[in-house]
Amino acid sequence: MSGSALSSVGAAAPAVVLAAAAAPADPGSPDGTVDSVRRRVLAASAGAVAFGVLSYALGSRRATDIDHELPEAARAADAATLQEQADGRSLEIDGIPGLVSGIDDFYEVDINNVDPVLEASEWTLSVTGAVESSFTVTYDELVDGDVRTGYNTLRCVGEQLNGDLLDNAIWTAVPVAPLLERADPGGGCECVMVRAADDYYEQFPIAALERSFLAFGMNGESLPREHGHPVRLLVPGHWGEINVKWVTEIEVLDREVEGYWEERGWHGTGPVNTVAKLWTVNERADGRVQVGGHAYAGSRGIETVEVSVDGGDSWETAELILPDVSRERFSPSRGGENLHTVTSDSISEPLPSEHVLGERDAWRQWQYTWEPPAGDHEVVVRAIDGTGTVQPAEEESPYPSGSSGLVSETITV
Image (cartoon, rainbow, N blue to C red; front, side, top):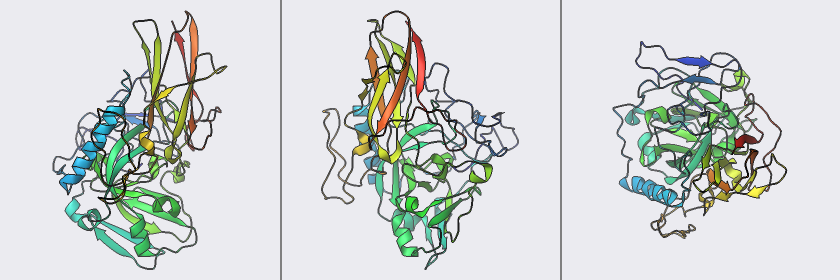
């Protein structure tokens, strides 16, 4: 998470802020549904543990001078194909979003009042520090590289367990690895500091950066200002705070130093915790009850979601989206072998190029429907990741390393 924190009506208008003393308040709606306005949550830096500051967006923060067409029309077409495929396999469940979040609904967590305004024509990225060769690349040089289009999910380390600071988009990006190879990094800590135009900075292992991407497109459009225009970092499977927006510098370090949020007591630079969200409860006309949400485990992927309607005494397997979009891959060059398969007649031909970003790093929708007897029922949900590890039941607050535990809700019929 990087960038600007508080939305404002104008330069002179104060933001409306609800500051949390330690962990952020749960931004989800009381009934567990996703409120598209409240999802635009922005964090300010008001103290050592002030990751959770809530601000309502009173006006649009989108830059009116950004050209929202990608450098090549084919890239927008690739994103449209992935969107169609996602729409065709989404579960239709009232109260939860589809597989791809809209740009206006995608959560925002930043550090200051006004987003930087950067023109692509003037943007550069410097690779510096403990490297054999320092250099700078321009926007045109970057987007002329090995362009990839695919799904990637981001989750905020400061969100409550069943909060909704979790979203998935179709990104257009290039790998970071070729830039690191060109720089020939050294250093004694195997770590990097990534800096942004808004003075945000985050340190994390260079191994994570080697598997990362520099994104310049989102859902078939140029990257919007509020999401880091013209270029942001995507680090698959890791907490959102190291996915630096408005990125301007990658510095290879000789020794470890603390990043912005680490200086304030947070430690969310590692892989995300596994979570299954319970975002909706729907009563059917036939007397059955449906519960549903999303599950996410970063690059480990989600194998199974299980639901208990008796407080955890017994478990049933929930329905997941099929096929699992988080496992799909595409060959990296046009005309190459296509590893993607499509099973639904409602979906167009698969994309014949660029592999999906982050490989397995996308959330999954789930739903479970049953006919309960009259009375109270404690519904609990848990996920099993791609390594076979069950989501931990032990509860932890978001501060300092991300929330964990099992989401539950008592339903009365």
